[in-house]
Image 1 (cartoon, rainbow, N blue to C red):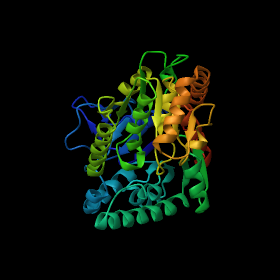
Image 2: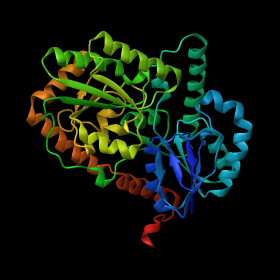
Image 3: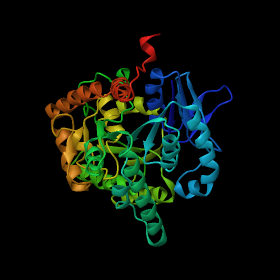
Image 4: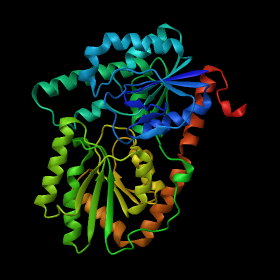
Length: 401
């Protein structure tokens, strides 16, 4: 049984045949599904110039069906005729197709797979319609992105009404159910059982270290962080904040400059650092060096996978009550929820965590329990159980190994 996975996350192959992916979350997802199939074929763009660091796809039964590199839809659509031919050859090789959406090539792969009678399941991991309202586009860029979002929303409705569908978190499940789809709620995760640490408390040193892991773009609410740090310093707390994650295009670079400018204007330029992207394996170790995880994100995604990573690393979590986050975070039990990504609200929540060892320890233990319930192995087993029942086959190769 051969599984095909289609997504827009770029990969590359080294001369020794190893497959790599820049962020690491997609690589771990692929590894989690690989044991259930004889072979997995990835239909993904391949870097023209691979980055220096990345995360390796460790499963030995995964191969590439490469697409030309495209950083976004603007580069994708001019290549559509040649991409469509590559997608058709890829579909022909696969028995089961998994589409992670939204993604530019997904609807074209879906229609080819449907025409050839392939079994398809869709995993919805984001919401471009909610994201559109958070981006600061103007003029023709705003109109072009709105048109693209409208097309993606149509494509999502088309696919989710016609294929087995999983959605990351309650908000995405409810959205697509309202549009007529039958949806199974899941939690996108990157953690393995051995990623879960055992520390009991944080904030016990002279300095409090805040960590945010996020792509740098306007929807993430990161401009609130310098004011949070400034407020803590004003209240007598020695604190620093590190932001780990890549910039996304020109709008991400502009956001990075804005965060740095805000930190300088607030007098905490030496306490707020943007550290850039890290491969997932290195990132998982990094969580253990911090005291509190802070994510002031806005709408536009399901459940950020970094929340589970922070929980696995023993960090009390402070984040926003948006999208599907409230279906993972129970306020006061495994994290603190803030209604909006505003500096004053996050400042108050972070101060609560710093001031109360009892609260910290409760959040840490609640986070561990949540992380243990949402490891990659458990998520993959649940998803593949649904897929096997839907399509009428047993697809765990480990049962016969």
